[in-house]
Every structure is written in C-alpha cells, then in structure tokens.
Image 1 (spheres, rainbow, N blue to C red):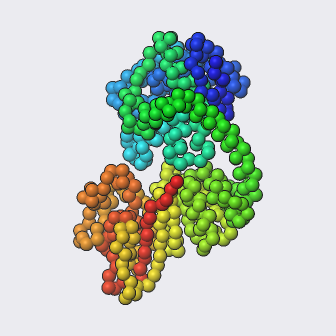
Image 2: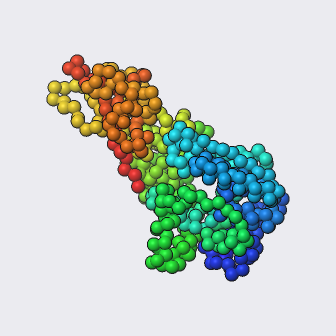
Image 3: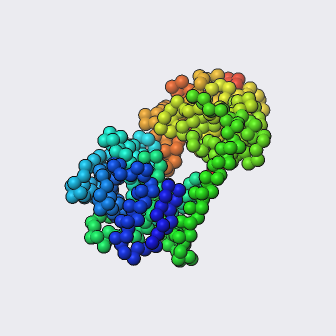
Amino acid sequence: MPLPCNSKGFHFPQLFILLPAMLKVFNENILKLVKDHPGKKYLLAVSGGLDSVVMAELFFLAGFDFSIAHCNFQLRGKESDGDERHVKKLATDYKVPFYSIKFDTEKYCADNKVSVQMGARQLRYNWLEEIRKQYKLDYLVTAHHADDAIETFFINLLRGTGIAGLHGINAIHGNLIRPMLIFSRKNIELFAKENKLEWREDSSNETDKYERNKIRHHLIPALEKIEPQAKNAMSHTMDMLRLTEEIYKDAITGKASQYVKEDTNKTTIQFGLFKNLKLAPLYLFELLKGVGFNYSQCEQIVESSKGQPGKMFLSETHKLVIDRGKLIVEKRAESGGIKEMVVTEKLEELLTKETHYSFRIRKRTTHFLIPQEATIATIDYDKLTFPLKIRKWQKGDKFYPLGMKKPKKVSDFLINSKIPLPDKERVYVLQSDNDIVWVIGYRLDERYKVTKATKKLYLCNSQKAITL
C-alpha cells in the first residue's frame, strides 16, 4: 500500500490490489492535510474529467461536507457545455450545492496578452476563491494527481526554474489542498472503472498542442522505456528536493536577512550582500524571485551595482532601482503585467525580463554615422518631450514610418512587414507626448529622424535579454 502524502511531499503509489483501499488511504491523507478536519467544508473544482469525477466520488463515499464548482471556458463549443451538464448532474446525484460560471476565455486572453492556458488558470482560481469566501467554505480542492506533479517537474525544469519548481506540486498551499497527489493516473482510472463511474474526455488532451501533453505523450513514455520505474525515481527525487529546499531557504534567510530592510511601500537591500557573500546572484534571486525577477536579471543587477547608480530593472509587478550603496525595490504602479514604462531624461538603462534598453544623449558631430541596426534608433533629441513612455502597441495606434509622408496604422505596418502573430504580441513602441517615435526594433517615425538641422542626438538601443 502506498504511503499517504503529507504537506511536505508524496510517494508515487503502486497499484492497489483492493481498490476500495483507496478510500481508506484517501481518508488518512485528508486527516494529515487538514487540521481539525471534522466539520470542515470543501469546495471541489470539478471539470467533469476522470480525475475530478473520482475525487468527487471519494469525497461522497467518505461522507465529507462538500460543494461542487465548475468553470465553462467555452473553448470547445458543445463539448464544453456537455461537460457543464455532466458536472451539474453529479452535484444533483450527490445532493450537494453546485456553482458554475461561463467565461469568455479567448477575449480575456486577448485583452490581457496571456496564453489560453494561463488565462484559463487565472479565471478559474480567482472565481473559485471568490465562491469559497462567499459561501464560507474552508478549503478549495483540486484533483491534481501524482502524474501531474511529475509533468510539472519537467515543465519547470525546461523553463529554467529554481529549486522551488522542481518538487512538482505542493499538496497544500493556504486554503488550497490537493488530496489526490497520492494516487497515480492508473490508480484513478482503475477505481473509476471498478465503480462504473462516468466521466467526460477532453479532446484537447489527445493533441500535442500544449507543452504538458508533449511531456505526457512522448517524454515520460520514452523515460519509462529506459527505466520502467522512472516515475518512482522521479517522485523520490522530488521528495528529496522538497526537503532540501527547506534547508536551503533557512540558510538563505539566515545569511541574507541582515542586509534586507522591509518598509511599508518598499524594500531595500544593502550592497553588503554582494561584498560579503559568495554566489551573491543566487542569494539575490532567492530574495527577489517572489516579485518576479529571474536569475539572469539578478546577475545583471549584481554586476550593475559596481557602476554608476540609476539603473532600473523591471519585473511584471515590481521595479528595482540601483541607488548609492543599496537596491530599492518597489511595487509598480501598473497591475496585471508590464503595461507602460516611463523613461526619464536621465535614465540610461532599463532592463526587463525580455529586453535590455539603453539610452544615450550626445552632441551631433560631422563624423557621427547613424547606426543601421534595427535595434538602435537615432532620434532628434530636441523634438522629444520627456518623460517618454515604452508600452505595447495598441489597436488604432498610428505613426509615420521612416520615408513616408502619410500616417500608417501600426497594425497595418506589422502585417505588411509579415511579422508573425506571436512576435506581434511582443511589439512595443516608444512614445513622446502623444506621438509614436519608434516601433521598437522595426521602424523609426519620419518626424523624429535626424536631419541637417539636428544638433543633439538621442540614441535608444533595444536588445533581447539573455535568460536562463
């Protein structure tokens, strides 16, 4: 019989000889995850698929107090509506409260410039938490299982995550619990067939459209051909990484905390961190990863601290400024990701996760040659109105492409330039007052080009950041 999971980890299970034993192990696991379990109320996120249907059945058989919630993302037409009807029937059969919502997922993702997977996840968890609080339920419950944790391990590994991303999925996080992590997908499927449960198949799970599916369909089977017990080995490794992370965090906190000062609106980090600790970028990354900075940025921050103050680094939610002898970290004014960046007249460096911007002011000389690289814009300084702005292009934006006397929509310019759709979504513009000066990396505005009358130059350089 598999060892039950706790808040620190789980053991990848062998198949149950007696499937009813799943209920016993499930009950034991809930008792380990939830303090003062008797009397607690649970909100189950049920999609209608195999995993969540089995989870609902186990909660029912265990006699727990639960409600069911379902999100219809309207991504698969009639198939999505069929899922919703199936889950509603489950709730009716169990005689428990049922909550559902329909999302215009595609519009949300387009408006917020996020992938369908990310957008659906944001919509789902935000709404589920609202329902949990509204009806005074104690815990939100999802049906993630052991195979999901292993797939997450590889997703994070391929994205270059730190140690925190390599232990898969936590069984408990605040008011969110995942009691199914003790079961493999095979266990769940056998239980469903043994108990003649009905579930809905999501056709998108059979495609290789998403990264998780590629890992599930190709990478893990390939590893199992090399080592049949690969899943057990990976599960053990994730358990060890989870324990290692606890020691790691204690060491980081103990050594780095003396250089950190937390205020209401900002955090300051003294340069002593860099001077007195080896592997300073790693310490800094552990301090800053929670506000969105990656390891490459932390390396750049440490290196930049040796030069002149004033450089600014941005994450999706925070900004970091290198001051004299310290770093100042503050929350950005915008919410929901980087929407707009302010460029003051004195700013020389601006670094985001994706791009390294540099700005220089210099006098025009007869020997100066205008750079021809698309990543560098040479602008007539006296025509600019500071502060400038860098933002994503929007529908309706117009500018005068270099060499043209009539305005053109940025959208049309990108189409005519045959810019692929994924790249279009990452195009930014440099704005002065209400004018677009530069479609960054593509074309300068005719009105701001250097002429014979230009006395002062403003050079903007935009380079793709190196990320790990």
